[in-house]
Image (cartoon, rainbow, N blue to C red; front, side, top):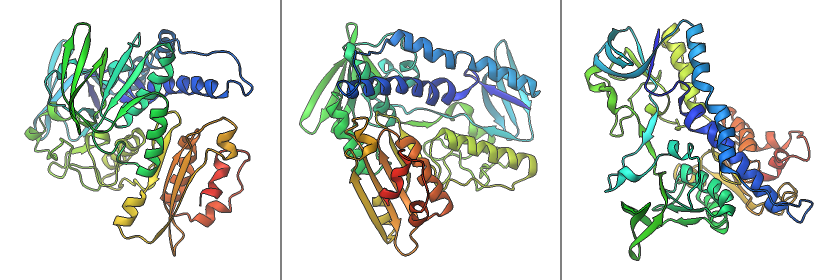
Length: 428
């Protein structure tokens, strides 16, 4: 068994995504809470020391590759640091450090993840990635994020909490932001985002990026015509696509969709080459989301099918998703619009909860929920939360959606109190 990777071992989540991002979000949340609670039992003036925060972040990321290398070595797995490309149905060429190898195998697993989508605009070479942002030793004064998805929202909220030292976050998007989330709850987050001083624009197409001295000028078109935004750093937040182009999949007869995602059957096996399986962001079977827990779930399914024959199918029911803004936005199941399109007979409950004890005690003005319950069966089919503990509370609703629990089931629970989870019964 062998593993080939042209990136340090550990993957996006541990090194360039979820984990380092959450370290930064945790500090941003602390700063935000201190500011909100000033005058209500808290004094002083906390601020983010970006350089020391990055040093703290690296205590999580720096040891990761060596730890994974040791684990792979202990398991007897051969490792190659380099790139791989298919040369046939059952063969790959590995270009590793100092050597080139041709290898044949009975099976292959593609888990190459995703990469930023090509913007296709002049000056694209000036745009930095989310990985670059997470490695910044110093925050520039003006940071412009292209795209109004979860990466831009999360990073903009971090930047703005550090903005007390003079940093401005600008988000440029076109159309509905965070379009996979319920738009009523998104609208509340958008309003809060703007109230925090983030320059969020949702009517803007980026057409080019120009280098101007030590900074950049982002040329855009809006509903009112051409415009430009000056920034010291421009960051890509406009979405990601499967990272498969460099694998020469056509040589192995591995079919992909127009975005490069490996087409798989119900066992996560290539529909055109049974030797090949795929998991995570490089594929997109029905019902899946580009999330770390989904990739982990896929990996378990693929391992089982390789070792025991095709015996297991992925189950994506009740997969929660969170935008780690401050406060976070969380969702699971159907949005109201999706339920209506599917003609499910539902009742919807939606309320601003800033005045509820859970949020008022921490002076959080941005708090809201929407729940969607099927009439007749009382089955919970969707939940959408905005608030300080939304990222944790959503897991209760995810359990309900996955296992078909009803609103009555959750109402009859005895919850620890006072907790944010104890609010669940009042959301149904």
